[in-house]
Length: 153
Image (cartoon, rainbow, N blue to C red; front, side, top):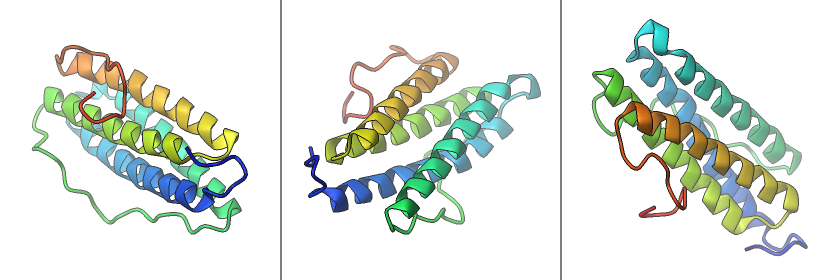
């Protein structure tokens, strides 16, 4: 973990930038998730997209306040598999949430300021809560992860 006195600020900012990149990907990916769901099932995808958009915007403000240029969104993102059904859509949402969880774990590892640790812990928990719902929708078991965001968890 980085030191509270700010000596790890560069590593902390880099991890925050990686989290922002993951949040950009999640915002983009949820457009695909929502498009593959029936109209009456899109509320969960819309809520997740809004949550990721909100945290992405908060990250941009945080990085700008530190004098760090926020990571821009890419023009598009490669999907890890074809999304042809609601089950595929739920599976993609799991991938998106697990990706953001991994990025937030990196932020926790590099965080030197308590406010950054609190942000990372909160967003890690939120990603896992959303992932549980999507794992359920995709028919995956177990639906929970003991250590969200860690490799092999």
